[in-house]
Amino acid sequence: MELLEILECSPPLTREPLDAQQAAGVAQVFKALGDPVRLRILSIVASHAGGEVCVCDITGAFELSQPTISHHLKVLKEVGLLTSERRAPWVYYRLVPETLAELSALLNTPSTV
Image 1 (cartoon, rainbow, N blue to C red):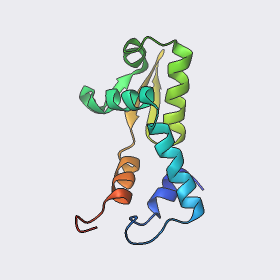
Image 2 (cartoon, rainbow, N blue to C red):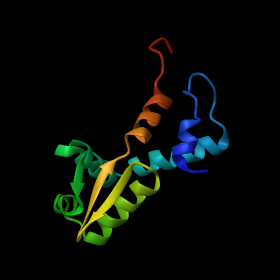
Image 3 (cartoon, one colour):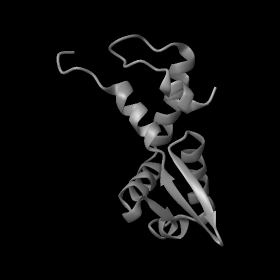
């Protein structure tokens, strides 16, 4: 089962407990977000004009090697937070808003809890 499918069927935490498979899938997404570099990458992509950013702009924002940045981008893509498209020599990255919406819905709790 893909991670986004797990998130789509996950109920809000206050309505019903996650089963083991759901918890494992959601934990992978949060684990990816738990790395400061990946969180910054997600922020760079999310805040970039037009909603997409070239890998060259991401790499330039860090004092890390290109292979290290590529690894972080791969992790974010594997958990469904980013998608990419190759255009000539460059790759452009975009957020997957559905994944962020599912995470938000999962954690959304009434103020009375």
